[in-house]
Length: 129
Image (cartoon, rainbow, N blue to C red; front, side, top):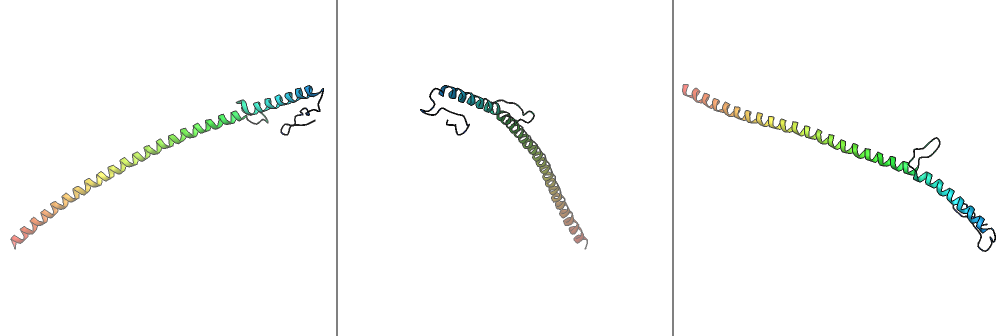
């Protein structure tokens, strides 16, 4: 009798299984149904693995989707935190630049006053000589 390549199921021989082909087909269909049931259990049910069992494909996909969602949420949180940190730094930087600008303006003003005072002192000194 011929046997299928992938599942090893016996099938009727063309023109050679007279009077027994019905039983062979019934057995082949039962074997196929068993194989499909096993495949459905491995692929289709969203069940965590039990003792010694492998998790179903549906369960593994659900776990991967959950992990992906968590990763996406964590990435968005990281971007938000980084943005806030950069904003705080920029505010501090602008404040420092403004302070330096004010100090430079005051120093320039003080220098102008000192120059004027020096000029007055020179004039006074020259008039006394």
